Image 1 (cartoon, rainbow, N blue to C red):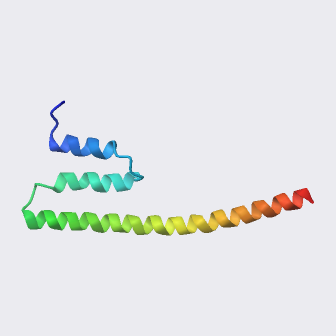
Image 2: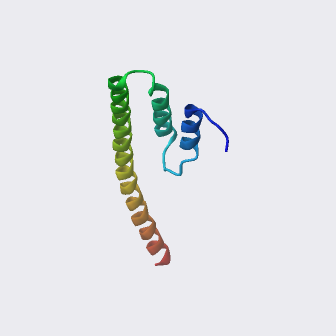
Image 3: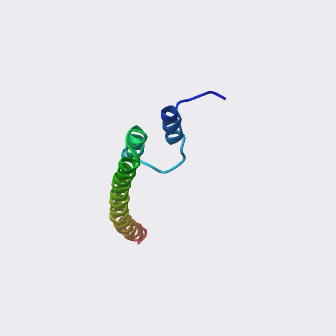
Length: 89
């Protein structure tokens, strides 16, 4: 077992995670590592809250994109179905 610093371990854990995160999500989480341990407890709590806000915004954006794509895929499937029916007739 190799000895790694907390920073190296943090980055390795993020890179090896099997979570469905995009690059901006990963960068937000990676930036949290740089801030932890640099300030007092209140400062760290504040940094965690800021990171949580960023991640909440990312979740909101992902949900909006999912809704938009859901409508697009429904429309495409209906159009494809109609095209197949027209071709078969």
